[in-house]
Length: 290
Image (cartoon, rainbow, N blue to C red; front, side):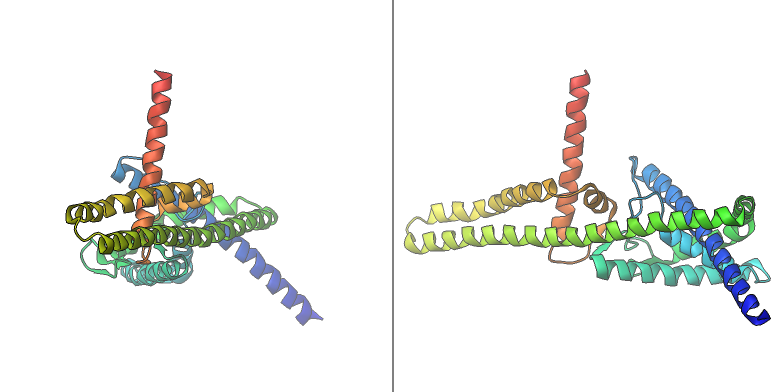
């Protein structure tokens, strides 16, 4: 009987501990989103809502911070913390980049232009920065985090954790569904453009065969092919954008690039089209106000 009571007590304590860990995860994810957004907005001189999810959080920061607390709290000196966080962050960042790219065919960061990078997924300066951040989290930020969570009664921590889990899970599901649908839209748009270009090219070949004497006209027709491609691409892009929901547009604008070669350029053009449309709408609104 005592064994059963002790086992039930240990399960309850474990659940309580998980609730606290999840609250830490969410709070560190929010802190990571704030850092990313402020840094990238200042760097780009415009508002840049970072992260692939809809909510104001970057989960990779939450995972990294919680793992730092769990794995490094017992280490004896800062150098050990630094190296564990440095190599641990590299593994986490590389794995996250690889997984999101192969699932959604998009990347949200790219270190290709930074020295000592590996496939653009991680870089030495970034890993060193995360090593230093690990020391900062363990010695400065987490004591403040403990003061916050220790003031919340355990019952309310469990309620808060469940609420966070529900919102976070719904956000993940919505974002994943939207990104998968976005990939399908890009693929369909590419096929529509290719079909129209193919029909145009076939008509050009047929016309050339039947009218070899009109060499100049054939050359003009060939030169106009690039203009035709650009015009049709823009038309199809506008059609696709009109069918996209807010989550898809935000995901498209927050991603760095699409790695699937078949529509990498198409995704970039779609992002530029959205940015141009937003700028045009803003300019029109300013003119009305004036």
